[in-house]
Image: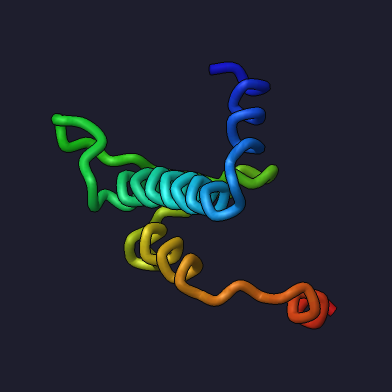
Length: 98
C-alpha cells in the first residue's frame, strides 16, 4: 500500500479509530525497540550459536565505552522504565532544561 493511500485511509477514520491505530503503532514500535534492547543485553538470543553483541562508543581519541554493559545497566530495563514514566508537559520540559 502506498504512503498516500495509507494517509487517505487513516484520514478517513473517525477519531477513536485513529487513536486506536496510533496506539497499535506505538506499541509495535516499543516492542521492536524492547526486543532489540533484549538482544543487546543478552537476555534474548540473536542467533542459535550463543554469541553476544557488544555496543561500543569509540571516542575520537580511541577510548572505548561499552554501552550495553550488563554490570552497569540493562538497556531493556531502562527502556521499560522510560516508557512507564509519565510524559512531561511542555512547561515541565522547559523547566527541566533551564
